[in-house]
Image (cartoon, rainbow, N blue to C red; front, side, top):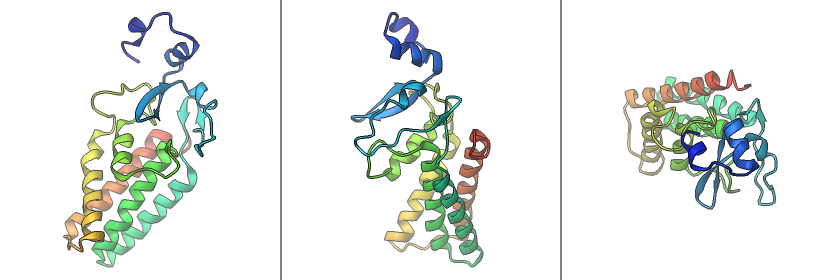
Length: 192
């Protein structure tokens, strides 16, 4: 983590582990804190939190959520082909949501990921490159606009019954495909 060495020389074992292994960002009391991968196993699970599984310092995807994401993408493509555009957007958004959850792991709070927050956390990219700086552009910024737009379209069709164009529905499904492709690329098919 750039800049930490000079600012925190002489810190304890936890800090040295972060320098040696890189860091996974963990949310605690509304703040994101760097935690060395070796320390994640020591996190308490008394609040319903499941420690992240790591291999070679990288977070594994949650396979059940990734399977669900792929199933929902298949559903969205079927609905798009059937010209059921609103339903395609709704399934497409939830495909992206579960794909991001699969990559990020379970949230620190038991109630699940909030929709806007999951996009922000996913785009930061710390789930695939734990040493990426917590400030500045995320590693996956090119996906941010498409994911936000997909979420907004899902709200439009599910809550306000606003009709959408075929082009918007196609773009939404393509965003899901790009999201899953990015996860596959960065986790080598879901198995780092």
